[in-house]
Amino acid sequence: MNLKNKVVYITGASGGIGEAMARKTAAAGAVPVLFARREDRLHALAMELKQTYGTEAKYAKMDVSDTTGISPVFEQLLAETGRIDVLINNAGFGVFKTVEESTLQEMEGMFEVNVFGLIACTKAVLPAMKKQGSGHIINIASQAGKIATPKSSLYAATKHAVLGFSNSLRMECSGTGIKVTTVNPGPIKTNFFETADESGDYTKNVERWMLSPDYVADKVIGSMVKYKREINLPRWMNAGSTMYQIAPGLVEKLAGNAFNKK
Image (cartoon, rainbow, N blue to C red; front, side, top):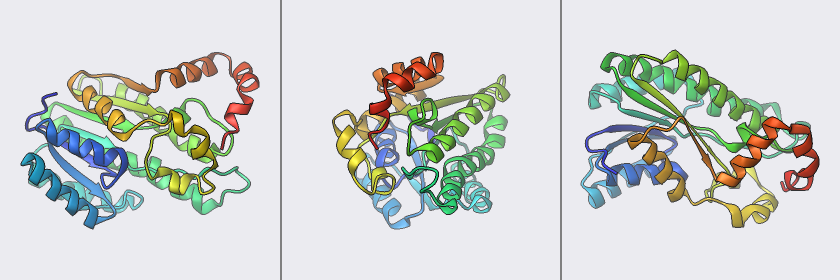
C-alpha cells in the first residue's frame, strides 16, 4: 500500500491498534501525527518510526475527554503539517458492568472519550479538509455498536452513538471530497480489557476469537487506499449482528448463553 506523503492523524496512538496503525502508515510512506495522553510513549514511538522507516512523525499530548483542549492542539499541528489527509478517531475505552453496577462517573467517562471527544476531533479537522477539498475520517466503533450484549450497555450505547454520528456525517460531507469510514471490530488482543474486564472472565471466554491489532490495522490502512464505507471484523460476527437487526428477539433467544460470556 502506498500512502506516500499522506498526513494521517491518529488519536489513541500510544498502544493497541493505534500504535499498530502508526507503524503501518509510516511503512506505507505516510506521515503519522500521533495523539495520546502519555507523551513518553508517543516520544518513544516517534523515535522508533524515525529509526525504522525514516519517518519524521509528529506527536502531541492530548486527552480527548477534555474537549476544550482539542481544538488548540489540532490547530498547532495543522499549522505544522499544512494539511490533513486522514483522521483516525481511535481513542476509546470500555467498562463491562451492568447498568446497576456501573457508576455515573464511568458512564460520563466513556461518553466523554468515545463520543464527545471523537466529535470534537472531527469538528477540529473539518474546516481544513473542506478547504483543501479532500479528506478521510475513520471512526473506530465496534460490533458492540451493532449488537448489544449484557454488561456492556453503557459501552454499547457509546458505540451506537458513534455509528449514528458517522452515518449522518457521511451524508453531511457529500460533495465536499470528504469520506467517512466506520470500523466495527470484535474483541482485539490489546490492553483494552485491562480496564473493561477486570475479572478476566470475558477475555478467557473469547480469547481464541480475538483479532490481532496488526490485522485490524491492515484493514483500516487498506480503506485509505480503496475506500470502504464500513469495515466489519470478523465476518462471522458481523453476520450475527446483521441477523440481529433483522430478528433481534430470535437472536437474543438463540444466543442467550453466548451473550452472557462477560
